[in-house]
Image (cartoon, rainbow, N blue to C red; front, side):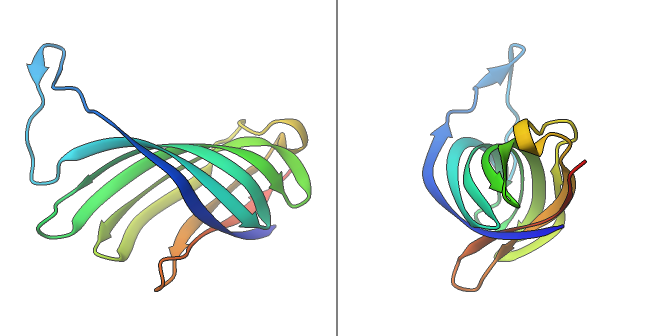
Length: 139
């Protein structure tokens, strides 16, 4: 099955990275790492919201970077209500996205979405509109 939804971010809350881990200071790179929590709202074939843990790094001079995210989605997909997790990551250079990975976490679906599996991608229009596109199956 195929689903396409538009999403907006209603909350972006940065979290301070630690100064040290295991008693050792964090090494500095040209692409500093940051952590944030965000809330997304979906409309379309998936309706609902997600809470996302977002970990990324970006070189401000070149615009290059990468991110990894874990989301908890609560909504209705294909007329079925439930919750599930999505894991996704990509590298970026300006507005270009590459090496993207997006998967529904196996075994994470609940209620009417139990048994949900699939993969997908994030598509960003020239005007900045964000879309989640999924190819999925339900047991």
